[in-house]
Amino acid sequence: MTRLLSVKDLRVGFGRDPKANEVVKGVSFDLDAGETVAIVGESGSGKSVTALSINRLVDFGGGRITGGSIALTRSDGSVLDVGPAEERVLRSVRGHDVGMIFQEPMTSLNPVHTVGAQIEEAFRLSKGLTGSQARAATLDVLQRVRIPDAQSRLGYYPHQLSGGMRQRIMIAMALAASPRLLIADEPTTALDVTVQAQIMALLAKLRAETAWR
Image (cartoon, rainbow, N blue to C red; front, side, top):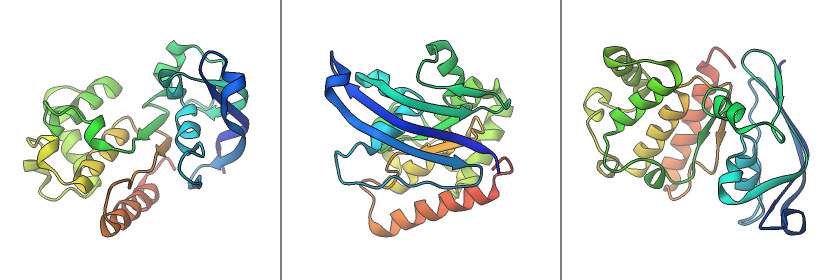
């Protein structure tokens, strides 16, 4: 098994003195290829902060890693210490090595662009695909996340889709760069119980189907 991620004694704080305002204190876990790790806790316990720290997106919300280490094995086999990594390095990690599915797709998707255009942009930025190639890749990934009548959905705007469909779109965008590690930050928030089960089952199927697991 390949060790994809090793988090040791992670500590994260906020504010002018993050060490004095730590909200994550001593989190440790490992993740190997093909595994799923669930971080469980009550609201406000630091689940999302921990998830956002793995690719340092927590920085954009005023958070700082104050202690511990995050060792990420990249697609080229190198191991990156995420904590002290420069922003230019992290930009190449986000999306390519680590994909992210956020809690609320309605606030993550752009309301003035079709979902097809947004996924095509993800392929353009991650793989340099344009035109018909980007469109074909977008259609393929929509089919992979089980979007019914995927061809017609390319022209839909986010508000025209149900919550479950929007979450599938977010999963499709996260898969565009073929990341080795996929982080889902409470991906079933605000969905009814039946749709929650469908999204979780979809993630399990995608993990089993993905060749690089």
